[in-house]
Length: 253
Image (cartoon, rainbow, N blue to C red; front, side, top):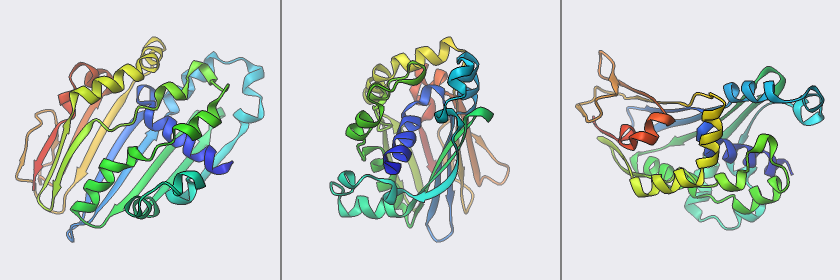
């Protein structure tokens, strides 16, 4: 049951882009490896939702839980999911960690997933396959008849698979597939509408740290540091919905 809890929490936050502060961080090393961090902070949304709840609901055991733990991503997967994974998917999951920090009464709900990619090919595989580890049946089992605050996790299982990647030792290219992105928006429309109605902001930040200066970047919204080793892209899901190409990145380094 613990496995179901952590993975359900992670994927719900992963797909609830409409009410989560998202940060992607890439730290490229001189040896070609890269540490990747996906951080999902739902604190602001929790703060808003908590103000809408009755005192009796806030005092239930579910809202008194406090979590601060790190576990291996593979070990958190249900056995049924592990058995369906390929050899490469297993290795990917085993080199990833999941960190959960939760204290709803203090408006804390944050999930981080970290991965160490040993080279460019490993990084590209990770980015293309992370969202493909399907949790549909597990989410259905855990969230059945449990829809806190009107969110239905089953409607949100769309997956952030709307990027196409080309990654080599000297380039990081990511392009939004607009057809897939529009399909994602259709599946998450109710969550986006709810977040907007509650005035929940949806910031999205991407940070890339390179071992050497970058040579070229195509995104005019991205900020390049003075030494050209750091690229920062700050936007929001609201802006991305209007113009998905804001998230396109073509970086040569």
